[in-house]
Amino acid sequence: MTNEIADKSLAPAGEKQIEWAESQMRGLNKLRERFEKEKPLAGMRIGMALHVTKETAVLVRTLVAGGATVAITGCNPLSTQDDVAAALAEECVNVYARRGVSTEDYYGFINKVIDFKPHITIDDGCDLVTVIHTKRTDVLPGIIGGAEETTTGIIRLHAMEKDGVLKCPMVAVNDSKTKHLMDNFIGTGQSTLDGILRASSILLAGKNIVVVGYGPCGKGVSARARGLGANVIVCEVDAFRALQAHYDGFRVMPIKDAAKNGDVFITITGDKHVITLEHMKLMKDGAILANSGHFDLEIDVFGLEKASKKRNIRNNMDEYILDGKRIFLLGEGRLVNLAAAEGHPSEVMAMSFMNQALACEFLVKNKGTLENKTYTLPPEIDDTVAKTQLDALGIKKDTLTEEQKKYLSGWQEGT
Image (cartoon, rainbow, N blue to C red):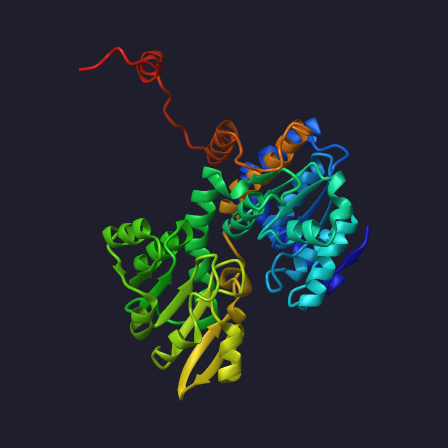
């Protein structure tokens, strides 16, 4: 095994973090027990570009229990937890991950994972798959498929499929209900505000919080911010989502108008430059900017850097003087929930990573039969994840009677 980590002496601390995550991820632990017995991933090499967190470590252990060998790197320069990376490096895992890597090292580490010649890829943001398809096509013949974790990555995969350049089947894990609802709405809703609070220590009650993007993640952030007493303003380009935000009780307006009113701005769209320098020039003195989209392009950080003076105020909080006003940027404009906090709660990630592990099993079972396109996991797998999590939580649910099943599957009986 080869590793490139920050400090191997951090391994004992990382092991404690993983132990804590495991105690919260009971559904994934149940799946690991089955994988241990059945070895559905025997002989598979899995290359991963995910946030190297304590929760991801539990997924890695599940894949290894299933018979796979694993190489992992980060999918964001500021999301690696160095103690967790050190702990994983003590196990049978190839780890190439440090917090704060340069762009050169970031892609260098991705190439090290590709050198591992994976049969299956697990990606968060599609950087691993993109590099394979553009610069490392030599490994494509050995890849049976991949799984993608997040909305941004799914957008890129659909674009690749549309352009006819996707060369292996991909599973859109993000589109499973037990991932999309739990991770995007509940997980992002909590962890985004966690990152903002850790970085800034501000009071959210009474603040005008502008949420740019009202997809599942934006809905979660908006709901949690309102729950903490904030006045939420939503900015959207999609007519239905803007209408939904209005009927959910939020103010809806264009970003150029919201810029003048907001105290805290949260971008969460998966798009580029949704807050520009011109928007920032309209903001109040003391405005705080945070991004919870996958890439650091949602806020025009480069334009801000060029146009203003900068100094660090707190950990993960930089002050910019723009036209005599202070603008505060959190986490360098990267994923604030991971740059300034620890990402989603472990209990939420248990469901996301059950989907990832089952996606790997799905690809192995269907090796050679899938087209080079993007798939959603079958509904029965989603249902398995939900049932496993309910069982792990000790929650019972009702079941349909035979009469009810017959009624729901028929058409003859009416009023």
